Image 1 (cartoon, rainbow, N blue to C red):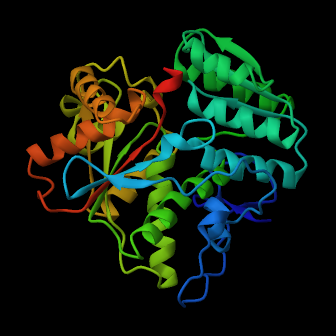
Image 2: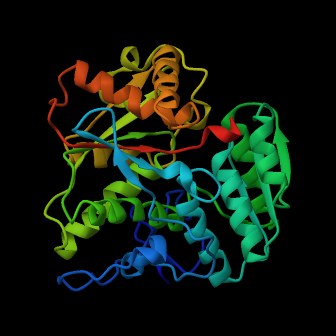
Length: 355
């Protein structure tokens, strides 16, 4: 019974959601010994297996993405877009499909606008499991091809992003497969937490002042929070960085919760990967931001396009959604929410090759 509900404290051996409707978490695990860690980067993200609640059953060599200099001495980029399927979601897919194998799943289902679906489909193929990915009817053809090429079935759903999720959940509830959700499944967050572990190791166990991260459902921000908190609890680092969220104007519920609807207003039709109206773990995202003295900001299309084009010109070929966080970094500095000499890391989350 290694899953528990933080809302009602029920425990389960394998469910995607508590009977009370809340997301589930893994039960507390023993902390690694507080001693000098021995980490072998050749093992990728699995070098941090002592922090992971899932054993490695499925892998495509994910992890240990480069940490490179950014546009100024205080900024570094972590190149998550060089992971096997081109986005940070490979981290969560590796742990989620490893969990699926461990519990004996015979088919996996996921709903996604693109990157998560491609990652789950690829890792399902690696595991030898059939996959079915529910996508918005207007999903980009390049994303659909990435899903189909590894053998997964694609189900296109008319309506809102919520309608896509609803169709997938209906299929899960009908017993048609195991829900490998990047929003609901706690194994996914366990995988994204490894970015924080790697980053600390790459910085010789020091922590940057802040991370700026794109937020839709928030698995990267929540993973970073949990990853750094785990390192601090183990005595490997001494603090957790500020977590600064970047959302798409017009679809920015975290910004609205913190600063009101006017701060979230506007339009952003280019950052489709984070246009989520109702994040499953919104409360947890807000708690992580508050606990780290963080913040959230909404970016319009024009700012994202400008940041994307600049990144391309610097050699970082990323998709538009990945440019939201670099655009937000500039906005945070313009608003004096970051000092010029604050050490900031910005993950570049998805490749431009599938846009």
